[in-house]
Amino acid sequence: MATRKLAASTLDRFKRILEERERELLAIIAEHEAERHEVRMAETAAERSPDPESAEGGSMAFEFEKELSVDRNTRDILAQVRRAIIAVEDGTYGACLVCSRPIKVARLRALPHTSLCVNCASRRR
Ligand SMILES: [Zn+2]
Image (cartoon, rainbow, N blue to C red; front, side):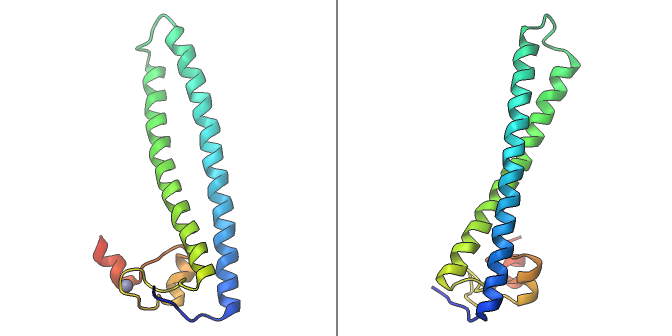
């Protein structure tokens, strides 16, 4: 496994940023879950109504789909944030997962949860 020498204070700072990010993402996910619960309640009510093809029902389904895709992205980033926190702890943070080369600190500042250097990230696209 590739390791990256970063100053302890730098690692500390990134870890705090990542933990803060993790809390934000968990809050967003909890909020989405609460919203979905409301949508489900509304849909159950709509199913009982005499007009299930109502425009309102359709737009609710659309909102639901949109929420789900936002949620998938949020969970995806959360997983990356958590992997990065583990990497800080085991000393692999800041080393590219693909080529093992150091990820530039400027890139880590912009994208603290990234596990790829700029070259490998652009090749994946
Ligand atoms: Zn790389």
